Image (cartoon, rainbow, N blue to C red):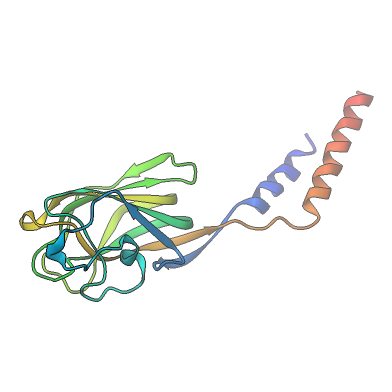
Length: 196
């Protein structure tokens, strides 16, 4: 068939290219959760879930949930990525509080589940972020659910910042002449069909 090489070339043109990236900050991640905010004991600190993706990992900048409540934090990625690792800055006060164990669920752009990570142990009393490498690259991720499974010292979810490492899958724009080429191939196919 004469059109097979042309079809293969078209597939190469529309496939995505990848570029190395650290995925962080509000231009690349949007965070949301149904976990209720910490009560008066937190004195107003940690009231905004968006602070875990604002690029600021300093103490008292992040999110604190209600005491004893675990739950899920959704991290919508702005774009599609092949992810290699996840970094968690745990504990707003660095007092051995916050997340104890967690797991990540990866979803594609259609919200289909790609895979689930191993269960990770969060660091205790950390100041810097701890990075968790995945068992192989997770491909085509557009959303991640951070499922907090348990809490340190029966405290609360306390996360200062999160980020990912990986490659952005950037769609290659179609060349201007590609639609015209497609129309021409369609016309040739119809003409051949009429003659045959």
